[in-house]
Length: 86
Image 1: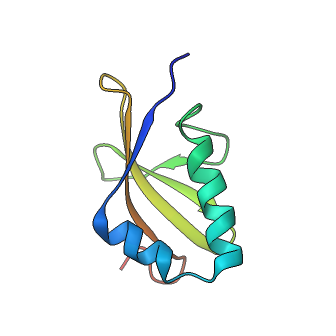
Image 2: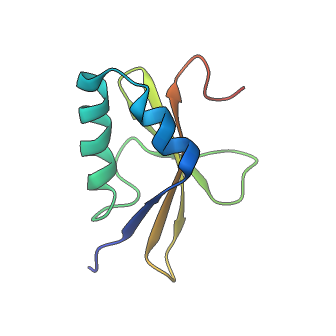
């Protein structure tokens, strides 16, 4: 299975920089794992959205899209669970 390339939206990169380092490290490890398995156990497709998936990492949520044809994962949002769906 070929690895997927991971892209970060500028806003997602900024959100990650603002998160406490110990949580940011955990989040990055989970995101890196998406390159080998873009739909890991625990990830969910968001209802009402065409191609958005959610990954839980502690109290944080990573929202991303998957392009199987291009082997790309686009991380668009990284936020605390209380703020992510607003």
